[in-house]
Image: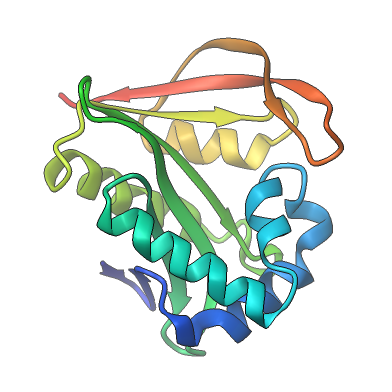
Length: 176
């Protein structure tokens, strides 16, 4: 999926070095919201293992992972996940992060628009949802820009890296 100067594509092993650099650069900011991903990418070896796992999950249709690349720099600047898939309903959770230097430029909103289209039209999802930390105002804006509706608060629904359970806002989007 391509838009502007960006491309969303499945991860490849040769992404390991630049992906690791991106995650380590933003580790402090990302660890609370993506503890599994950040904890799985600590060096090149673990990052390659993480990428292989994501490729296998895609093949099994369990989780779909997309690396967001800047085509001008050929560097990854973010990741978008289609996860927690329930094929019976069918519905899935979307999760995403972007490099701190790229925040506030509308890139995440545009990337999510393409992932939504892919989810509804290729994967045939009926509903997509997001779980967003109450303090993550930027992510809430991305959700609203893409037509998600805040459906409520899920109390103590997410475990942060420090082990603390925290509330999340639940946003939903139904295929029309």
